[in-house]
Image 1 (cartoon, chains in turn orange, red):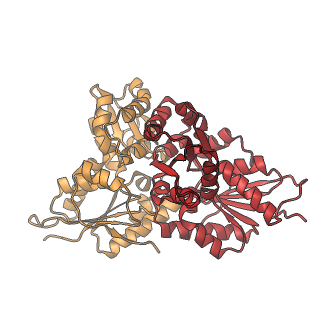
Image 2 (image 1 turned 90 degrees about the horizontal axis):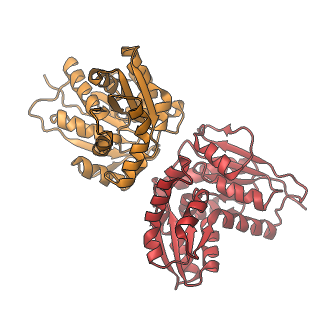
Image 3 (image 1 turned 180 degrees about the horizontal axis):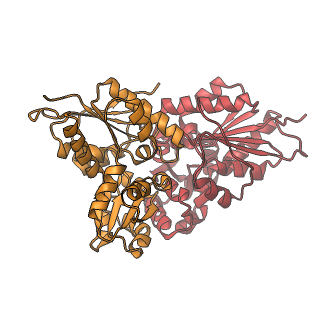
Amino acid sequence: MSDERPIGVFDSGIGGLTVVKALRDLLPNENLSYLGDTARVPYGPKSPETVQRYAIELAEMLTKEKAKALVVACNTVSSVALPALTEKFPVPVIGVIEPGARAALAASRNRRIGVIGTRATIRSGAYEKALQAEDPNVHVISRACPLLVPLIEEGLLGDDVTEQIIRRYLEPLLEDEIDTLVLGCTHYPLLTGAIASVLRRQIMIVDSAQNCARAVEQMLDQESLRAAPLNNGSLHVALTDSADNFLNVARDALQLQFGDIEIRVLS
Amino acid sequence: MSDERPIGVFDSGIGGLTVVKALRDLLPNENLSYLGDTARVPYGPKSPETVQRYAIELAEMLTKEKAKALVVACNTVSSVALPALTEKFPVPVIGVIEPGARAALAASRNRRIGVIGTRATIRSGAYEKALQAEDPNVHVISRACPLLVPLIEEGLLGDDVTEQIIRRYLEPLLEDEIDTLVLGCTHYPLLTGAIASVLRRQIMIVDSAQNCARAVEQMLDQESLRAAPLNNGSLHVALTDSADNFLNVARDALQLQFGDIEIRVLS
């Protein structure tokens, strides 16, 4: 038995396309429906109540299209709205935080793990909690890196200035001898190259987009929700407001192919 | 006769406090009511229709509090919503673009004027139109500087990296021999020092916050709406969602004094 209903993926904006890319690479037979809330991006500075309300609206739009599972491709939403979404919707809900935390614990030898993310994600302490829930002895060093998203959205992926900013952000984590770094923001996989060049030493980079995709694969198997092996997976992209230049940056850097963007005005 | 009703000032977020600062310095007797839409900031990437709808909502909130005039302390809103606001509300409406454009034309000798702003403001061509409406022979060179707002919000007002980014953004304008530079974003007055140090030569900086305040003063006189000369002007600040660190950056850099922030949840 197979299930060709789409996997619904949503984010506050366009950054979640890194999760879409990881899903397409790992699960090429699945139909994906992406919804990015570009009308209200970014969620980071908004209160948890507002973020929960918005997340439920987006999830409702996707479940009305018969999504068989919901993937929260956004750290801010994952950190504050996962319980509310799981309670409200009858389909499996997968976020980015737990899969990333589990992969970091599997990778780390010295139990010193660094986490970088937006100001909101770091302030929420979500990765710290997820890591310490699995291993109370893990030492977590987190750092908010609010300039990385705008640098990525400007397309300065391999730029000198970006490298300087990354170096400055990561310095205290390196001094603290981390051996694993969690990219706790769905934009950051676009900077993996630049981050790796600053890290130099043997530090494992944990990409939460890839690990989220692995968690989705596992869930599909457990719940018998896989599409047929011969299904040629489709990708549909909808946004709540017209996209800016970052859509081109992401599409090019991720080598993602999709047709016209649907614009869905929020009521 | 005097009129102590407040002047309602609104912005997509906290950047408009530079206009509040300019108003307080120039019109210390006026009561000011500031409303920042931090729940939906930034407006830049949103469509003109969405921005108009949000602007009308904010203006309605301020006019319900008997605002005697509306000051649009936001370039994005000024560039797309001024006609709609002027039509809908019976009080005078002042934006930031026309006052800035007029001041630039008064300052320029060689009629070569540079304009910097967010991607949305530059794309709208609003300054270009306002400048050329007054002088069809003026040569306007505009440049979107999307990294400046995040750098300001990080508090990196005098940082090396900020100076490098400013230098890179301004290089083509300097090559084009501008003699006047319009700061077409309400955040940018916080970078006046850094921008001046990069400009070096005799280039006039036109601060749209200060020029907006002058336009408000003129309008109050014309419409006989001034508060009494002995009135000790108050400042009330309301936001649509709790503020992040940038509120502290702005308050400190502007040396603005106000009491508790009121949070007004949008329905």
